[in-house]
Length: 121
Image (cartoon, rainbow, N blue to C red; front, side, top):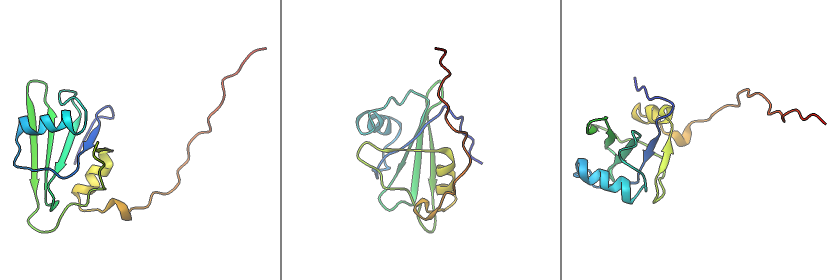
């Protein structure tokens, strides 16, 4: 089970060369995503065939790199722009479980109406 605090963002970059290690991926975060790799957020990378994933994050004392390789099949990531896209933890968990997000339908849920602040006249 993937547990990510709500304050942590997940940034997904378009396909990259996954032979890169800590420093190469951190440089891609700075240049391609225009983000700070020391921010504590998770930066997700995949290769062109989408059968491998690397997640780079700052662990407080140094970089951490999580890697996954599928023996059969591929991950179904959404199309990323040159600047990358932000994923929710739920979306990332679904991708890791083999769910194609383009085929997922979200149903309407209740949300409280927005009220305007009371103004005394």
